Length: 283
Image 1 (cartoon, one colour):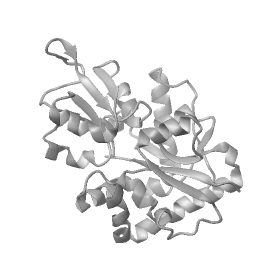
Image 2: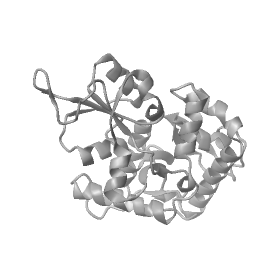
Image 3: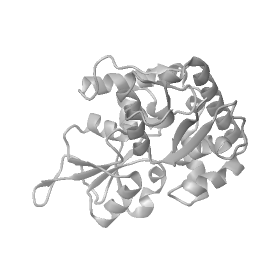
Image 4: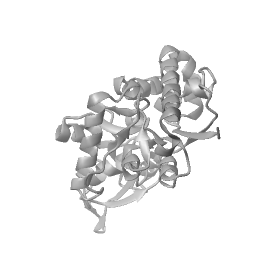
């Protein structure tokens, strides 16, 4: 069997969930795996380019290549109160504002294929001048005055006040009000061509690694620290407590409903084709 390339993001919920695999604490079930860590938008682009076998990606990106991938039941990030936040450099700034001298607001997002960028487009269509940068550059750009608004993900949800930034909108809360569904941010996808037997083993290894992290929280902290943008242990644990939940263990009926709602909303806005759906791999 050839080596499978597995990509995960550097955000704490992923390094926590994959701590068992990253440190060889769990049985790989005969799989030859090369594990790579990268920014979420880089992983999105690689999946869309068919340059990786299994990866954590934004559900926006997963929907764009839904004909070619399946979503694993375990490893997803979705829930209530988990959404990206829209931040401002100055109090009172809004996406539709025209700023002196009559220019549109400059809005930073963490990648055109991220679910965060999709949410901004759904709820603020055509507002501001949208630009995509690496997520870790957004808050510094806002704090320096180089941008007006930013869609912030990962640890920034917990630390933006320390950077002197203002909360304009919790985009996840806006989603919840509109859909009454948990917000599906991202999940583990695998190429359909791997076949059912291999997909089952990949799913089992992902689930085993997640369960190991949940049973060894203190041990997983060092792995999270190594890759996190923020150094505070309290922030890292707050991130895990929020993003690693019952739907991370298994998408379940509610998770599937949330994915369907995301696809329907994006299609209604003309961002995705009508009828686009994601296939969930066997458990």
